[in-house]
Image (cartoon, rainbow, N blue to C red; front, side):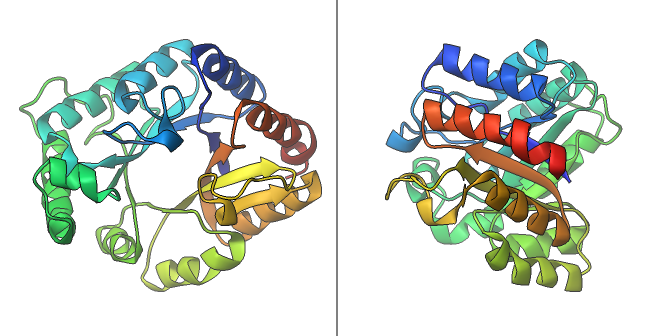
Length: 267
């Protein structure tokens, strides 16, 4: 099971220090989310910067690390520019870029781009077809480093999972503790799905405040409890785990330290 983290922080210095410590400690992937509007939970360097630009910067600072966006919201993005950005990152990383895509979550962003929320599924499928065809085509510049383009993963709810299985693409679930993920993982296998990935909040300790992010979906506790949770994800067939650590700078760094020192060497 591959492990990655989101290099979030309250400012540039904290974000850089966190990413540097994670990569130096053996974490091999840096993941960023996607969003258009300013939101209290994703202010500034904690997910508020434009993801593809920030990923390009991280790819230069950590050229051996894999980078990924999780997940680019296709109905609110311009497909031609996304294809060019993805192909460029594919080149800059020499094939170590992952493009996870999703139908979208926030209704206000969809409305801003003129997409009725009840049509996001249809629009997502149209955009996905266009994205895959363009990355495999011979028109837009640059031609991807990876033949056919960087790997595309689907992220979203159950309908997106079924689409991923039907198309033979990796599927990234999110915000489910192991017991919650188990039935979904079983359904994905039954559908003939391939690579199963997951994105989860992780915190060392149990002082996750109410209302912070998705507190009830945080894998929290002692080093032993974190080790048990990560091992259970692996047993469920999760091949790639993307983690958002802590809920502020001190808890993010403490959680990273516990993972690097007490958990990952035993996983």
